[in-house]
Amino acid sequence: MTALASIENQNITALMRDMGINAREASLKLAQVPSEPKTAALKIAARKLRENADIILAANARDMEAGRAKGLTPALLDRLALDPARIESMASGVEAVANLADPVGRELARWSPERNGLDIARVSVPLGVIGIIYESRPNVTADAGAMCIKSGNAAILRGGSESFNSSRAIFDCMLAGILDAGLPEHALQMIPVTDRAAVGEMLKLSDYIDVIVPRGGKSLISRITDESRIPLFKHLEGLCHTYIHTSADQSKVVDIVVNAKMRRTGICGATETILIDQAVADDLLPKIAAALADKGCELRGDASAQKADNRILPATDEDWVTEYLDAIVSIKVINGVDEAVNHINTYGSHHTDAILAEDADATAIFLNGIDSGIVIVNASTQFADGGEFGMGAEIGISTGKLHARGPVGVEQLTSYKYIVRGTGQTRP
Image 1 (cartoon, rainbow, N blue to C red):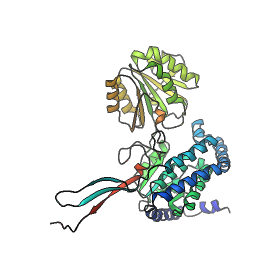
Image 2: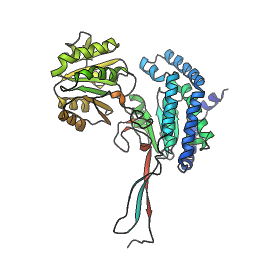
Image 3: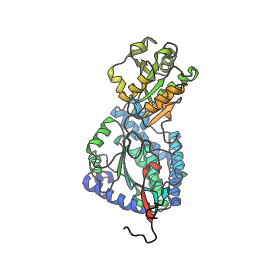
Image 4: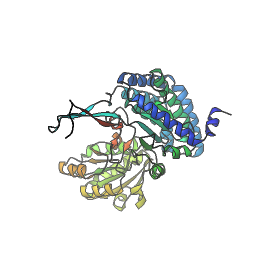
């Protein structure tokens, strides 16, 4: 019997409880580690990723072969696929996180109330133990692991079964960095089974895990939301919009829209719906439709949009609420920024939405009215990324409003405590 088969036959409940206990103990130690060893661990891990690129690619080839046999969509296969450039991007991302300022121990505020003369400071601290549940994208193993270590948090990773081999090979590199730098062994753990029961048991570990970060499709998010006894940083679907206002600079529109949709169709920041003002639709929509169609994008639109190009198929009500994650886009012709705001707030996922406009008043209405974690002016929605925000990387894009919203970087993986210093005061 192989080691993995032996683990698969273990009691899943006991396995997950042991991982939770180990993570909690590691988190208490890691919270006291100064910046230098954490930085060293990540730089070593980045080196290990580069040195073991062939091993990672071989593991990914096994996952890709299994994914094709399983009938994964092209978008999911794109998320799963690794190549030398993507491995280098992972390693560079880990180094970028390593070079960030330590988010732990920052003095966020300090004051002394007149009534008691106490010296009160609010200081950043790690959250503790973070559970990350993700599908398809093996690079999350490196990104999430690096960010948790940098922010002084222990982490339990649960990658998707389709990326098991790739994620495990990446995890081995991350763990090597942790051990070589002398950090606690269980500061980073990966669930060693593909049994979905492990997720259910993980969601019960409220005594050990402080927050769960889910990254995946609707079914995964729904399950975790329903079952979790632990607070969540929700990373819901990226039903992103690009709205073209009457005042948009027409020389920029086509390039921005094509990039927003087609740069990578399988990421959460890809535009899924284009809204365009009636006043400029006759001039701009044929150009946009032609450029997208030339890139292999399927076009679906309302009756007004279909007049622009005979390749635009009729859109249904379902299209306005669909995250395609594929070379498909829906198009709606509207009348003004108020209608755009209403459509996005009604049908969107509160992830990322963009306006292309030169009119300051319209832009202000859009920025103030859109209820999303990221709102963009005159740029592609594909900039919805922690690395592009200068945060080194991200553990996800939070579409919730409690604690963290938008890209969740190392600073968002901290909480705070109050440190109160006195000189002998007693309370009357």
